[in-house]
Length: 114
Length: 238
Image (cartoon, rainbow over all chains, first blue to last red; front, side):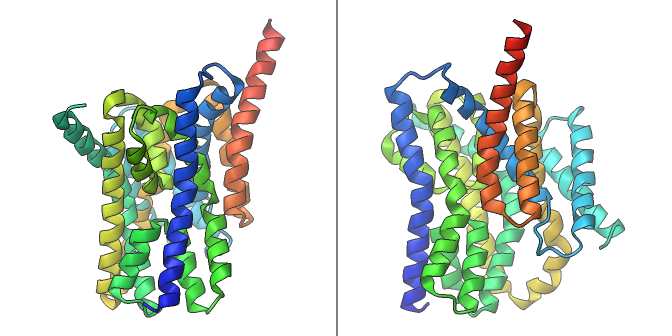
């Protein structure tokens, strides 16, 4: 690997790590220094976790503009997730449900080609 | 925490990472193949995956490399893409406040989107003294899958590109399924409102190609709307 690309890789790695580590470290110190239970900030932080998972789910399901045949891709994802959500009412095993999602999506790729 | 308990918790975290591994492997293989196609050696592809460990940024990085984009532009683009990671630490940190600083610095390296989601949904069920070992086990699984997938893609090359298009999209669907399964048990009361608002904001943003900005907006608007709504309802009923 050329030196300029090596340096760039290390810089990007360090920046990515800093974005993860600094807020993590500062927040741990703050949460052990102060007792903010019940405050508005604590309530917002408690809601932010599930909100972020929901947002990540939406990003994974809604195809980006560059994706070809966006509507069929979106429909396949919705159908597969609907099956998983229905089965979840009976089975709450994370591993099995993930495998089910993969299987149903794979079948939809075969039976609902773009 | 005893060593035996730590090892058990680490192994439990590793088991919990299986769904992430399933989803990461095909994406990492695709990255290895792409790196191979722009002329990166196997070692260079592994170095990028090992040092950066952030899927979308790695793809952007090598595609900009291929077009000879200036280094500063590549660095700024990946910085913007990874900006969302600043949100994860403060939400996980309160669960790990008794862990030593060096362990927190180590755990921060593996705090990807998927590790964050899996930890948010499940870390509360782990005894407090075992949580750090559990999280490190979860991240070890994810990191191993990412590195081994990259190696497979970079070494498999042309053979994989013919097989991969058929299976990769199905395997990669493990990640959205994982997000859904982690989210479902949390959906009640104002969490449900926060999730609906956040998903709508992120989905609309993604539709228009504003991925990172929409994620940051979703993280703020979802909780804010849910909290204001629940307080307004309390005032109406009292």
